[in-house]
Length: 351
Ligand code: NAD
Ligand code: TYD
View 1 (tube, helix red, strand yellow):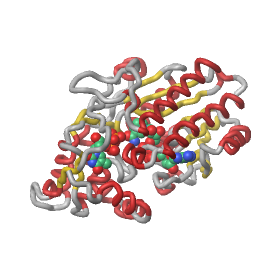
View 2 (tube, rainbow, N blue to C red):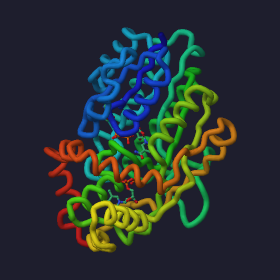
View 3 (tube, protein in one colour):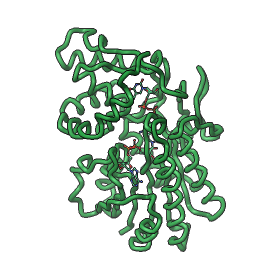
């Protein structure tokens, strides 16, 4: 059996990817390494926790000796690396952990792979990254695989740094790497610090909907299972040393998404049309707020035949339904430390 290490498998995207791979490839044994930070939650993996081809290991990618021993013990065939501190606003409040996990953690995994993989061409080191490494677009243009790196937040700078390290290990040590840079994901199990689940939760609880600045920043949204499917394609059929941009050609201004969520939820919660939109509150903008992200996914579409499976309307509907049906999940992840984060981020944040 080929053993594959997934890092960050208890997070949002990692849990969807694990569920896909465990069901689709019974001949792989998936080892999920996760520190279980505030963003990691084993409840996300309930449906596969007893699968015979799955093992969970609690641990921190920043601890070099531990990572080295894990690689020696398991002799992994491949790594799919998702573990990261992932939220821009938290990186503005406290960048330290972003530098440690995203940069040093990635370095530790690269080092362990380099030193334990003798026949390098029999392995795969897949690094999952973000389109935020390319910086901020104006009204026109798209991020291509060849776009220059221009990260502007501590989060994107740390991810850019990790991407550079991964490429350096390809060129310098022939480590068999693959990288993908994806646009904003949405769907079930996303921690309610990110735009969609935060707004859905606040609409449901009739709390203010904090729209940064004038709500005119643009993001390019992708259904999380489509990201997982793209990773599966690139992992199996993508070329070594290559980068693939993943996105669904689905750009939205923040205010338009929030308004759309309000409309959907008015209907689902039996409220009057326009009632939830009354909660929209413009607040002080994020520092260094990137204006627009937009991915050109032509390489992935043309070379590997990937395309998104859902329209945004279908995806939003499924997402809202999931959060409404999974109140307990939301209550659990918003208890404890979430309250103090929320207060720090949003209290007294007048426009
Ligand atoms: P997430 O914050 O939901 O999950 C991150 C997971 O990593 C959590 O389970 C957490 O416990 C774990 N983790 C954090 N620090 C760790 C450490 N030191 N050691 C071990 N585990 C640790 O993040 P996500 O949204 O699922 O993103 C996963 C990856 O995809 C990240 O690398 C992120 O940069 C990238 N990405 C995310 C998006 C997005 O829209 N969410 C888009 C493109 C790329
Ligand atoms: P987010 O989900 O944090 O993703 P990212 O910053 O990585 O793109 O934010 C998406 C967009 O929504 C971004 O332009 C910031 C904005 N935003 C708000 O207006 N209000 C909020 O409360 C949050 C969390 C985000």
